[in-house]
Structures are given as structure tokens and as C-alpha cells.
Image 1 (cartoon, rainbow, N blue to C red):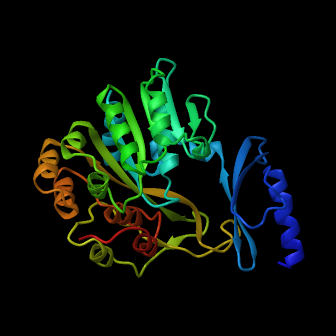
Image 2 (cartoon, helix red, strand yellow):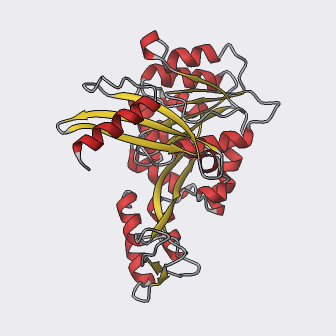
Length: 343
């Protein structure tokens, strides 16, 4: 794109997002509200960053139709959906969702909170920023310039008679301690962490300074997730060369049971010749059991916690992906690129 056109486009988008058009030396954030072809309101989050060749701009689309989904549409297996439903119906405790940036944590949390947000339940959130305006929640945005961060927001929420609290992210010891206190005083707390898998969330909390006895008293479960591209249903074709043995090699020592219908991408007009259309979630759900609590006290390292979680019924992310390959929804290359290896 010619630089003159790029500069004009960037300035126009910044103007629509109520950003400083003249300021090009520092990063900025903004929002644009618009409508999709069906007439529904959607929001675009704008982020600019100064680079050596001018301003770089990213726009993230937040469509309410894609943000709030049921568990089947999110990609939960029957095994994990039942365990997740049981967790979110608990009256008190902490439930964590982990994964890298852009792995769908917000979508999972919003979809879950939407299911439990009835008229009798006060659902309050502290976010940075508010990802999507949802009338069913009481949403608050942190403002660091006013000394109003996650700990201050949580402290204020405790005086607002909440039943369910969602904290955008546990980043430091103070936020972690406030979340634990909220759970101990009779609230159900949802939050996110940036870890590679579910058991690592426990070691992360320990590193932040949360004592193991408080983790055991409050933590209900951890959901780790990834997003993978799904094959275009208009052009995918059966993959005659893919074998069950090759897939089993990827997830050793686990066994892939059930049907096996592998497909491969081709490319068509509908998927813009990529062979893929849309994305789906892969999930690894750790439910805290008495045996797991004992392991936190005696052997709080990632490998030991992972072994205990697996024996308690946790399916690793790579196994969840392999099952989706066997169902013909995605390909092995997507799974290998998105999930941590089995150890």
C-alpha cells in the first residue's frame, strides 16, 4: 500500500476511534462501534504502535454473536463440558482460565458468565479494558492513571454485594490475595492467568506468593485453552494418506479410541483459498481433588501436579486436538503448532 494512502487511512481510523490523530510517537488505544451486514452492532478495538516505517495498526473485531456461545459451539467435548458445568455451579471458590494472548479466554469467560447471570445473581467484573458491553453484568474498567487497578477494583466490589466476580487477569501478588479473600468470604471468582497449561497455574500462584493452604481452600479448577483453525466444510476432502498410527504417534502414550475420519484442506472461494474457515477451542480442564490438594502440599512442581491431574481425569491439550483431528475438524499440523508437547 502506498505510504500516502496508508497515512490517510490510519488518520481516518484514528479519528473514528476518538484517538489523537496528530500523535504518532506513542501507542494509542481506541474503539469504533459499527454495524455488520445484518444490522447488529459490533465493536472494533484499535491499537496503534509506532514502528521504524510508520504507525502499525491492529483492529480486533468483537461481535456479540461470536463472543457469547454455548459450550458445544465453543468446542468443549462432552467429557469436559459436564465437568465445567459442575464447576461453575459451585457457590464459592476460584476458577481460572489460562492460555496465551488471543487463545479465546475472554470468549469462554463471557459465555460462561452469561449462562449463570440470572436476575437473582449479581455478576460483577473488573476488566482492563472492558472487552464487550454486556447488560447482564456490572462491568468496571481499571484506570491506572487514577490509581484504580485490579486490587482496588476488587476491594470496591466486595462492598457491592456481588455473588459472582470476574477479574480480568491476576497479574501480581496483591490481586491474587484479593481474589483469594473474595473466594474465602463466600464469592465465586473467575479470572485468567498466562500459563502454558492448567497445572502450571498452581505453580504460578505459588510464585506470586499465595500460600499453598489458601490455594487448597479456594481453587476449584483450571481451564487451559488454545484456538485452532477448522477445516472449510465446503472444500475439505478425505485424507487417504493419514493413518491412525501417525496420529497415535503424536499423542503417545495416549490411545485414540472411537471413529477416525481425517480430512485435509483444499481451498475454495468461500475460505479464500486457504482451506480453513473459522476456529475452535481446545480445552484442558483440571478439577482440584483431595489427592491434587495433597500433591500441592507435598510436591508442588509442574510435572508432579500434571501427573496427578491426568490421573484425576484431565485430558491434555494435545490429546484434545488429536480427537478433533480424528473427527475430521482440523489437521495434525494445526495441533502441533498450537499445543504444548506431551511429557
